[in-house]
Amino acid sequence: MKLIRRNRTFQLVRRVPKRYERIEPRKQVWISLHTDSETVAQQKAPTAWAQMIEGWEAMLAGATDDAERQFQAARELAQVRGHRYLSADRVAKLPRDELLERVEAVTKLTGDAAQIEARAVLGGAREPGIKISRALELFWTLAKQDTIGKSEDQLRRWEHPRKRAIANLIEEIGDKELADITPDDMLDFRETWMDRIMAGDAQPDTANKDLQHIGNILRTVVKMKRLGLVLPLDGLSFKADKERTRPPFSVEWIKTKLLAPGALDSLNTEARCILLGMINTGYRPGEAAGLLPHHIRLDVDVPHISIEPEGRQLKNKVSERFIPLVGVSLEAFKQCAAGFPRYQASSAGLSATVNSFLRENGLLETAEHTLYSLRHTFEDRMLAAGIDERVRRDLFGHALGRERYGEGATLAHKRDLLQAIAL
Figure 1 (cartoon, helix red, strand yellow):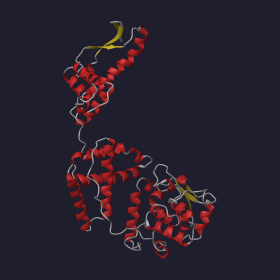
Figure 2: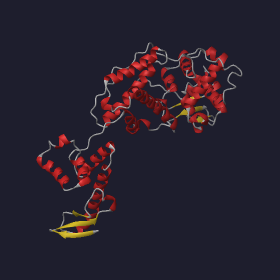
Figure 3: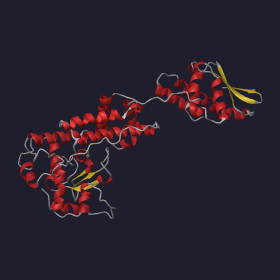
Figure 4: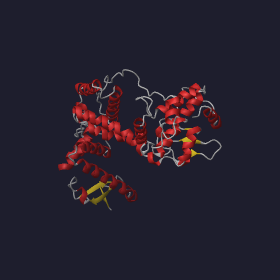
Protein backbone atom coordinates (compact mmCIF):
# COMPACT_ATOMS: atom_id res chain seq x y z
CA MET A 1 0.00 0.00 0.00
CA LYS A 2 1.61 3.24 -1.16
CA LEU A 3 0.78 6.68 0.30
CA ILE A 4 1.88 9.85 -1.53
CA ARG A 5 1.49 13.40 -0.25
CA ARG A 6 0.13 15.58 -3.04
CA ASN A 7 -1.27 19.12 -2.83
CA ARG A 8 -1.15 19.00 1.00
CA THR A 9 -3.21 15.82 1.22
CA PHE A 10 -2.27 12.16 1.23
CA GLN A 11 -3.43 9.89 -1.58
CA LEU A 12 -3.49 6.13 -1.78
CA VAL A 13 -1.92 4.81 -4.97
CA ARG A 14 -2.53 1.21 -6.02
CA ARG A 15 -2.39 -0.84 -9.18
CA VAL A 16 -5.75 -1.95 -10.55
CA PRO A 17 -6.16 -5.73 -10.03
CA LYS A 18 -6.42 -7.73 -13.24
CA ARG A 19 -9.98 -8.79 -12.34
CA TYR A 20 -11.25 -5.22 -12.83
CA GLU A 21 -9.36 -4.26 -16.01
CA ARG A 22 -12.56 -4.76 -18.04
CA ILE A 23 -14.38 -1.91 -16.29
CA GLU A 24 -11.41 0.19 -15.09
CA PRO A 25 -9.17 1.41 -18.00
CA ARG A 26 -6.53 3.00 -15.73
CA LYS A 27 -3.44 0.97 -14.80
CA GLN A 28 -3.37 2.47 -11.32
CA VAL A 29 -5.73 4.60 -9.24
CA TRP A 30 -5.15 7.58 -6.96
CA ILE A 31 -7.59 7.80 -4.06
CA SER A 32 -7.66 11.02 -2.04
CA LEU A 33 -7.73 10.37 1.71
CA HIS A 34 -8.63 14.01 2.56
CA THR A 35 -6.04 14.43 5.29
CA ASP A 36 -2.54 15.91 5.66
CA SER A 37 -1.73 13.54 8.55
CA GLU A 38 0.17 10.44 7.53
CA THR A 39 -1.06 8.59 10.64
CA VAL A 40 -4.69 9.32 9.78
CA ALA A 41 -4.04 8.47 6.13
CA GLN A 42 -2.69 5.05 7.12
CA GLN A 43 -5.86 4.43 9.15
CA LYS A 44 -8.18 5.52 6.34
CA ALA A 45 -6.39 3.76 3.48
CA PRO A 46 -7.77 0.19 4.02
CA THR A 47 -11.36 1.48 4.15
CA ALA A 48 -10.88 3.64 1.06
CA TRP A 49 -9.45 0.69 -0.87
CA ALA A 50 -12.29 -1.57 0.28
CA GLN A 51 -14.81 1.01 -0.97
CA MET A 52 -13.03 1.16 -4.33
CA ILE A 53 -13.18 -2.64 -4.60
CA GLU A 54 -16.87 -2.57 -3.66
CA GLY A 55 -17.55 -0.11 -6.47
CA TRP A 56 -15.65 -2.20 -9.01
CA GLU A 57 -17.53 -5.34 -7.93
CA ALA A 58 -20.83 -3.53 -8.39
CA MET A 59 -19.74 -2.35 -11.84
CA LEU A 60 -18.57 -5.84 -12.75
CA ALA A 61 -21.97 -7.21 -11.74
CA GLY A 62 -23.56 -4.65 -14.06
CA ALA A 63 -21.55 -5.90 -17.05
CA THR A 64 -24.16 -8.49 -17.96
CA ASP A 65 -26.93 -8.94 -20.51
CA ASP A 66 -29.30 -10.31 -17.86
CA ALA A 67 -31.80 -7.46 -17.42
CA GLU A 68 -32.76 -8.38 -13.86
CA ARG A 69 -29.16 -8.75 -12.69
CA GLN A 70 -28.18 -5.58 -14.55
CA PHE A 71 -30.92 -3.57 -12.86
CA GLN A 72 -30.02 -4.92 -9.39
CA ALA A 73 -26.33 -4.17 -10.00
CA ALA A 74 -27.21 -0.58 -10.99
CA ARG A 75 -29.10 -0.09 -7.73
CA GLU A 76 -26.17 -1.47 -5.73
CA LEU A 77 -23.60 0.66 -7.58
CA ALA A 78 -25.66 3.79 -7.03
CA GLN A 79 -25.68 3.01 -3.31
CA VAL A 80 -21.92 2.47 -3.29
CA ARG A 81 -21.52 5.90 -4.90
CA GLY A 82 -23.63 7.41 -2.12
CA HIS A 83 -26.78 7.89 -4.19
CA ARG A 84 -30.26 6.40 -4.18
CA TYR A 85 -31.12 4.77 -7.49
CA LEU A 86 -33.64 6.86 -9.43
CA SER A 87 -35.07 6.45 -12.91
CA ALA A 88 -33.72 8.84 -15.55
CA ASP A 89 -36.79 11.09 -15.49
CA ARG A 90 -36.47 11.51 -11.73
CA VAL A 91 -32.72 12.16 -11.96
CA ALA A 92 -33.47 15.01 -14.40
CA LYS A 93 -35.63 16.69 -11.75
CA LEU A 94 -32.94 16.65 -9.04
CA PRO A 95 -31.47 19.91 -7.65
CA ARG A 96 -28.78 21.27 -9.97
CA ASP A 97 -25.82 20.52 -7.66
CA GLU A 98 -26.82 16.90 -7.13
CA LEU A 99 -27.52 16.40 -10.83
CA LEU A 100 -24.10 17.79 -11.79
CA GLU A 101 -22.42 15.58 -9.20
CA ARG A 102 -23.96 12.50 -10.82
CA VAL A 103 -23.09 13.64 -14.35
CA GLU A 104 -19.49 14.37 -13.33
CA ALA A 105 -19.14 10.83 -11.94
CA VAL A 106 -19.97 9.48 -15.40
CA THR A 107 -17.88 11.88 -17.49
CA LYS A 108 -14.74 10.86 -15.59
CA LEU A 109 -15.00 7.41 -17.16
CA THR A 110 -14.90 5.94 -20.65
CA GLY A 111 -16.06 2.81 -22.44
CA ASP A 112 -17.97 0.08 -20.59
CA ALA A 113 -17.22 1.68 -17.23
CA ALA A 114 -19.00 4.91 -18.25
CA GLN A 115 -22.02 2.94 -19.50
CA ILE A 116 -22.31 0.96 -16.30
CA GLU A 117 -21.87 4.09 -14.17
CA ALA A 118 -24.53 5.92 -16.20
CA ARG A 119 -27.03 3.14 -15.68
CA ALA A 120 -26.47 3.43 -11.95
CA VAL A 121 -26.21 7.14 -11.16
CA LEU A 122 -28.19 8.59 -14.09
CA GLY A 123 -31.00 6.03 -14.01
CA GLY A 124 -30.22 4.41 -17.33
CA ALA A 125 -30.98 0.85 -16.19
CA ARG A 126 -34.36 -0.34 -17.39
CA GLU A 127 -36.36 -2.05 -14.69
CA PRO A 128 -36.95 -5.55 -16.06
CA GLY A 129 -40.39 -7.03 -16.36
CA ILE A 130 -41.04 -9.99 -14.07
CA LYS A 131 -42.65 -12.98 -15.73
CA ILE A 132 -45.20 -15.19 -13.96
CA SER A 133 -42.71 -18.05 -13.57
CA ARG A 134 -40.10 -15.67 -12.15
CA ALA A 135 -42.70 -14.29 -9.74
CA LEU A 136 -43.08 -17.77 -8.26
CA GLU A 137 -39.29 -18.08 -7.82
CA LEU A 138 -39.20 -14.72 -6.04
CA PHE A 139 -42.21 -15.64 -3.91
CA TRP A 140 -40.39 -18.52 -2.20
CA THR A 141 -37.91 -16.02 -0.75
CA LEU A 142 -40.39 -13.22 -0.10
CA ALA A 143 -42.73 -15.60 1.76
CA LYS A 144 -39.95 -17.16 3.84
CA GLN A 145 -41.76 -16.10 7.01
CA ASP A 146 -44.63 -18.47 6.16
CA THR A 147 -42.32 -21.50 6.07
CA ILE A 148 -40.65 -21.09 9.48
CA GLY A 149 -41.09 -24.25 11.55
CA LYS A 150 -42.51 -26.37 8.73
CA SER A 151 -41.21 -29.92 8.35
CA GLU A 152 -40.03 -31.11 4.94
CA ASP A 153 -43.38 -32.82 4.42
CA GLN A 154 -45.32 -29.70 5.42
CA LEU A 155 -43.13 -27.52 3.19
CA ARG A 156 -43.68 -29.83 0.24
CA ARG A 157 -47.47 -29.78 0.78
CA TRP A 158 -47.39 -25.98 1.15
CA GLU A 159 -45.43 -25.48 -2.07
CA HIS A 160 -47.27 -28.00 -4.27
CA PRO A 161 -50.66 -26.26 -4.68
CA ARG A 162 -48.92 -22.94 -5.37
CA LYS A 163 -46.72 -24.49 -8.06
CA ARG A 164 -49.79 -26.16 -9.56
CA ALA A 165 -51.80 -22.92 -9.56
CA ILE A 166 -49.06 -20.97 -11.35
CA ALA A 167 -48.56 -23.82 -13.84
CA ASN A 168 -52.30 -23.75 -14.58
CA LEU A 169 -52.20 -19.99 -15.16
CA ILE A 170 -49.17 -20.18 -17.48
CA GLU A 171 -50.78 -23.01 -19.44
CA GLU A 172 -53.82 -20.81 -20.07
CA ILE A 173 -52.33 -17.35 -20.74
CA GLY A 174 -48.61 -18.01 -21.28
CA ASP A 175 -45.62 -16.94 -19.21
CA LYS A 176 -46.37 -13.22 -19.47
CA GLU A 177 -44.72 -10.35 -17.67
CA LEU A 178 -46.91 -9.25 -14.77
CA ALA A 179 -47.47 -5.83 -16.30
CA ASP A 180 -48.90 -7.49 -19.43
CA ILE A 181 -51.59 -9.55 -17.67
CA THR A 182 -54.95 -8.22 -18.85
CA PRO A 183 -58.49 -8.55 -17.45
CA ASP A 184 -59.31 -10.73 -20.48
CA ASP A 185 -56.45 -13.09 -19.57
CA MET A 186 -57.88 -13.66 -16.10
CA LEU A 187 -61.44 -14.01 -17.41
CA ASP A 188 -60.19 -16.65 -19.87
CA PHE A 189 -58.51 -18.45 -16.98
CA ARG A 190 -61.74 -18.31 -14.99
CA GLU A 191 -63.70 -19.57 -18.00
CA THR A 192 -61.45 -22.62 -18.21
CA TRP A 193 -62.23 -23.43 -14.60
CA MET A 194 -65.93 -22.84 -15.23
CA ASP A 195 -65.87 -25.40 -18.04
CA ARG A 196 -64.26 -27.96 -15.72
CA ILE A 197 -66.78 -27.27 -12.96
CA MET A 198 -69.75 -27.54 -15.35
CA ALA A 199 -68.37 -30.84 -16.67
CA GLY A 200 -68.15 -32.19 -13.13
CA ASP A 201 -64.36 -32.47 -13.31
CA ALA A 202 -63.69 -29.92 -10.56
CA GLN A 203 -65.32 -28.27 -7.55
CA PRO A 204 -65.69 -24.49 -7.08
CA ASP A 205 -63.50 -24.70 -3.96
CA THR A 206 -60.65 -26.17 -6.03
CA ALA A 207 -60.84 -23.32 -8.53
CA ASN A 208 -61.03 -20.76 -5.72
CA LYS A 209 -57.91 -22.16 -4.09
CA ASP A 210 -56.04 -21.79 -7.41
CA LEU A 211 -57.21 -18.19 -7.71
CA GLN A 212 -56.34 -17.50 -4.08
CA HIS A 213 -52.79 -18.84 -4.46
CA ILE A 214 -52.24 -16.92 -7.70
CA GLY A 215 -53.49 -13.71 -6.11
CA ASN A 216 -51.30 -14.14 -3.04
CA ILE A 217 -48.15 -14.92 -5.06
CA LEU A 218 -48.49 -12.15 -7.62
CA ARG A 219 -49.63 -9.48 -5.16
CA THR A 220 -46.77 -10.34 -2.79
CA VAL A 221 -44.20 -9.91 -5.57
CA VAL A 222 -45.79 -6.66 -6.80
CA LYS A 223 -45.79 -5.25 -3.28
CA MET A 224 -42.34 -6.37 -2.11
CA LYS A 225 -40.64 -5.53 -5.43
CA ARG A 226 -42.39 -2.13 -5.47
CA LEU A 227 -43.62 -2.66 -9.02
CA GLY A 228 -46.56 -0.31 -8.61
CA LEU A 229 -48.90 -2.56 -10.63
CA VAL A 230 -52.62 -3.09 -10.14
CA LEU A 231 -53.34 -6.62 -11.30
CA PRO A 232 -56.80 -7.70 -12.56
CA LEU A 233 -57.30 -10.36 -9.87
CA ASP A 234 -60.51 -9.26 -8.14
CA GLY A 235 -64.02 -10.64 -8.62
CA LEU A 236 -62.94 -13.98 -10.06
CA SER A 237 -63.92 -16.47 -7.35
CA PHE A 238 -66.75 -18.97 -7.67
CA LYS A 239 -69.66 -19.36 -5.27
CA ALA A 240 -69.95 -22.88 -3.94
CA ASP A 241 -73.38 -24.50 -4.23
CA LYS A 242 -73.23 -25.48 -0.58
CA GLU A 243 -70.71 -25.88 2.16
CA ARG A 244 -69.20 -29.33 1.95
CA THR A 245 -68.28 -30.91 5.28
CA ARG A 246 -67.19 -34.43 6.07
CA PRO A 247 -69.96 -36.40 7.81
CA PRO A 248 -69.12 -38.11 11.12
CA PHE A 249 -69.18 -41.89 11.48
CA SER A 250 -72.02 -43.08 13.63
CA VAL A 251 -70.93 -44.69 16.90
CA GLU A 252 -72.75 -47.85 15.85
CA TRP A 253 -70.69 -48.02 12.62
CA ILE A 254 -67.44 -47.63 14.53
CA LYS A 255 -68.41 -50.41 16.96
CA THR A 256 -69.78 -52.91 14.44
CA LYS A 257 -67.60 -52.21 11.42
CA LEU A 258 -64.28 -50.50 12.23
CA LEU A 259 -63.83 -52.31 15.56
CA ALA A 260 -65.18 -55.65 14.37
CA PRO A 261 -62.70 -58.50 15.00
CA GLY A 262 -60.16 -58.66 12.18
CA ALA A 263 -61.63 -55.66 10.28
CA LEU A 264 -58.36 -53.72 10.28
CA ASP A 265 -55.88 -56.60 10.42
CA SER A 266 -54.64 -56.20 6.83
CA LEU A 267 -53.94 -52.47 7.30
CA ASN A 268 -50.27 -51.84 8.13
CA THR A 269 -49.56 -51.51 11.86
CA GLU A 270 -48.72 -47.80 11.98
CA ALA A 271 -51.75 -46.75 9.93
CA ARG A 272 -53.99 -49.01 12.03
CA CYS A 273 -52.64 -47.54 15.28
CA ILE A 274 -53.18 -43.99 14.05
CA LEU A 275 -56.78 -44.80 13.04
CA LEU A 276 -57.57 -46.46 16.38
CA GLY A 277 -55.79 -43.70 18.26
CA MET A 278 -57.99 -41.15 16.51
CA ILE A 279 -61.23 -42.71 17.76
CA ASN A 280 -60.83 -41.48 21.36
CA THR A 281 -58.57 -38.46 20.78
CA GLY A 282 -59.93 -36.75 17.66
CA TYR A 283 -56.44 -35.61 16.66
CA ARG A 284 -55.70 -34.60 13.09
CA PRO A 285 -54.00 -37.44 11.16
CA GLY A 286 -50.97 -35.23 10.47
CA GLU A 287 -50.62 -34.49 14.19
CA ALA A 288 -50.39 -38.21 14.93
CA ALA A 289 -47.91 -38.82 12.10
CA GLY A 290 -45.58 -36.17 13.56
CA LEU A 291 -45.46 -37.62 17.07
CA LEU A 292 -41.96 -38.51 18.26
CA PRO A 293 -41.33 -41.24 20.86
CA HIS A 294 -41.01 -38.76 23.73
CA HIS A 295 -44.40 -37.26 22.83
CA ILE A 296 -46.05 -40.61 23.65
CA ARG A 297 -46.16 -40.99 27.43
CA LEU A 298 -47.54 -44.31 28.61
CA ASP A 299 -45.65 -45.00 31.84
CA VAL A 300 -47.25 -42.16 33.79
CA ASP A 301 -50.30 -41.83 36.03
CA VAL A 302 -52.36 -40.49 33.11
CA PRO A 303 -51.17 -41.97 29.81
CA HIS A 304 -51.30 -39.27 27.15
CA ILE A 305 -49.80 -37.82 24.00
CA SER A 306 -48.32 -34.34 23.61
CA ILE A 307 -48.99 -32.50 20.34
CA GLU A 308 -45.98 -30.18 19.96
CA PRO A 309 -44.44 -28.06 17.15
CA GLU A 310 -41.20 -30.03 17.23
CA GLY A 311 -39.72 -30.57 13.78
CA ARG A 312 -42.94 -29.32 12.19
CA GLN A 313 -45.47 -26.51 12.25
CA LEU A 314 -48.86 -26.95 13.90
CA LYS A 315 -52.03 -25.53 12.37
CA ASN A 316 -52.19 -22.81 15.04
CA LYS A 317 -51.07 -22.04 18.59
CA VAL A 318 -54.03 -23.77 20.28
CA SER A 319 -53.21 -26.99 18.44
CA GLU A 320 -50.41 -27.50 20.96
CA ARG A 321 -52.02 -29.66 23.65
CA PHE A 322 -52.07 -32.81 25.80
CA ILE A 323 -54.66 -35.54 25.06
CA PRO A 324 -55.30 -38.43 27.50
CA LEU A 325 -55.33 -41.94 26.04
CA VAL A 326 -58.26 -44.23 26.85
CA GLY A 327 -59.98 -47.30 25.43
CA VAL A 328 -58.88 -48.66 22.04
CA SER A 329 -56.71 -45.59 21.53
CA LEU A 330 -54.57 -46.40 24.57
CA GLU A 331 -54.19 -50.02 23.41
CA ALA A 332 -53.17 -48.83 19.95
CA PHE A 333 -50.43 -46.58 21.31
CA LYS A 334 -49.06 -49.43 23.38
CA GLN A 335 -48.38 -51.16 20.04
CA CYS A 336 -46.83 -48.02 18.52
CA ALA A 337 -45.07 -46.48 21.48
CA ALA A 338 -42.15 -45.38 19.29
CA GLY A 339 -44.34 -43.25 17.06
CA PHE A 340 -44.94 -43.54 13.32
CA PRO A 341 -41.67 -43.17 11.38
CA ARG A 342 -43.30 -44.59 8.25
CA TYR A 343 -45.57 -41.53 7.97
CA GLN A 344 -43.56 -38.85 9.72
CA ALA A 345 -42.21 -37.52 6.43
CA SER A 346 -45.47 -37.96 4.47
CA SER A 347 -48.74 -37.57 6.35
CA ALA A 348 -50.53 -37.23 2.98
CA GLY A 349 -49.50 -40.81 2.27
CA LEU A 350 -51.15 -41.84 5.53
CA SER A 351 -54.57 -40.45 4.60
CA ALA A 352 -54.36 -41.93 1.10
CA THR A 353 -53.46 -45.37 2.48
CA VAL A 354 -56.18 -45.45 5.12
CA ASN A 355 -58.94 -44.03 2.92
CA SER A 356 -58.09 -46.46 0.14
CA PHE A 357 -58.15 -49.38 2.59
CA LEU A 358 -61.49 -48.34 4.12
CA ARG A 359 -63.04 -47.88 0.67
CA GLU A 360 -61.81 -51.20 -0.71
CA ASN A 361 -63.00 -53.10 2.37
CA GLY A 362 -66.45 -51.54 2.62
CA LEU A 363 -65.64 -49.73 5.85
CA LEU A 364 -66.81 -46.26 4.80
CA GLU A 365 -70.33 -45.52 6.03
CA THR A 366 -70.99 -43.45 2.88
CA ALA A 367 -68.92 -42.32 -0.09
CA GLU A 368 -68.48 -38.95 1.65
CA HIS A 369 -66.80 -40.44 4.73
CA THR A 370 -63.00 -40.39 5.18
CA LEU A 371 -60.51 -41.04 7.95
CA TYR A 372 -61.02 -37.42 9.03
CA SER A 373 -64.66 -38.25 9.80
CA LEU A 374 -63.45 -39.86 13.05
CA ARG A 375 -62.46 -36.40 14.26
CA HIS A 376 -66.01 -35.16 13.66
CA THR A 377 -67.42 -38.17 15.49
CA PHE A 378 -65.18 -37.47 18.48
CA GLU A 379 -66.56 -33.94 18.72
CA ASP A 380 -70.16 -35.17 18.50
CA ARG A 381 -69.54 -37.77 21.22
CA MET A 382 -68.10 -35.14 23.57
CA LEU A 383 -71.04 -32.83 22.86
CA ALA A 384 -73.58 -35.61 23.51
CA ALA A 385 -71.88 -36.39 26.83
CA GLY A 386 -72.27 -32.77 27.96
CA ILE A 387 -68.54 -32.12 28.22
CA ASP A 388 -67.87 -28.42 28.87
CA GLU A 389 -67.04 -26.31 25.80
CA ARG A 390 -63.69 -25.18 27.23
CA VAL A 391 -62.64 -28.80 27.73
CA ARG A 392 -63.89 -29.84 24.27
CA ARG A 393 -61.97 -27.06 22.56
CA ASP A 394 -58.81 -27.71 24.58
CA LEU A 395 -58.90 -31.39 23.61
CA PHE A 396 -59.80 -30.66 20.01
CA GLY A 397 -57.17 -27.94 19.50
CA HIS A 398 -59.72 -25.26 18.65
CA ALA A 399 -59.75 -21.59 19.61
CA LEU A 400 -62.15 -20.71 22.41
CA GLY A 401 -63.45 -17.49 20.87
CA ARG A 402 -62.61 -15.56 24.03
CA GLU A 403 -59.63 -15.15 26.32
CA ARG A 404 -58.59 -18.31 28.13
CA TYR A 405 -58.49 -17.85 31.90
CA GLY A 406 -56.67 -20.24 34.20
CA GLU A 407 -55.11 -23.57 33.28
CA GLY A 408 -58.36 -25.34 32.41
CA ALA A 409 -59.18 -28.93 33.30
CA THR A 410 -56.36 -31.14 34.58
CA LEU A 411 -55.15 -34.06 32.51
CA ALA A 412 -56.70 -36.48 35.03
CA HIS A 413 -60.06 -34.72 34.81
CA LYS A 414 -59.97 -34.86 31.02
CA ARG A 415 -59.13 -38.56 31.20
CA ASP A 416 -62.13 -39.23 33.45
CA LEU A 417 -64.45 -37.39 31.05
CA LEU A 418 -63.15 -39.29 28.03
CA GLN A 419 -63.16 -42.61 29.86
CA ALA A 420 -66.93 -42.28 30.21
CA ILE A 421 -67.38 -42.16 26.40
CA ALA A 422 -64.44 -44.35 25.39
CA LEU A 423 -64.85 -47.05 22.72
